[in-house]
Image (cartoon, rainbow, N blue to C red; front, side, top):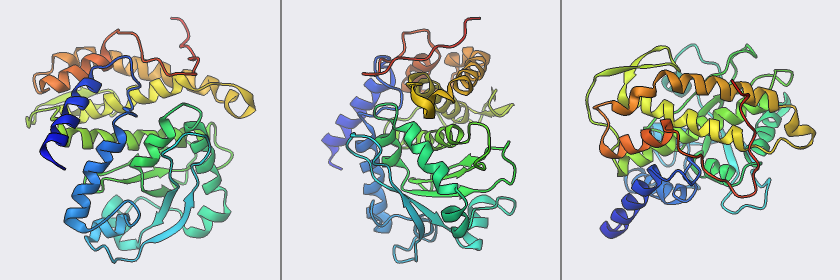
Length: 312
């Protein structure tokens, strides 16, 4: 990327971090942010948006076999910029390397025949109900890995900065309460972690301090970077849930679940209301925290009527 282009993108990122009038998932930046990631992958590993795979990134081998079970179609709305998301399988050794010995992934037959891919498709439809969310997610998640927790009450998801376009999410059974909504949240959750990592490569948000701060999401102390990532991700989820148009039988049934989830997130954010005073934030990081914790009016998303939190 030319220096002037990089400087221009950094300036746009800094404006977006504090722009309370735009969606917090930064749809106007995602494509350019992703391009910076692809530029690095192309230079270092000769991987492109069409050839990327988690196994190839892990082994640093662009010729490694990519075991794609299915590419889940995202053409669920008229928005441009949406691409099918490949669901990739990993060998036992690579799965162990990524997730440890206790995480079990769905096999190909389960994904194709046990309703798992259907849950993912419905989750994508929910994401597509809010303008610009689905193109944002599909630009950032280019390899998806599906986890079987064995318990419909447990959700697991993660991503790694070293795998800049890979997401690992659990999928509950078809009878699980609000299953597709939970899968949609997990997809958005990990996409936003990946996006904020791309932001940090352009505009640093925290210093390198190892001081720790309480995180209500993990109920433990984490670095400023860990708390900032959680705050950003869950504020995006809150904004997304608040923008879903709960109309028609598919979406209406999730209204109460979304309201309950938003109430929980609001309580968690309140716990760290003093995080804006964190001395390990850069000026840009502090600007983002001010936006996320502040009481400024929320972004207006064209064509969307917000759901409201219950009054307290």
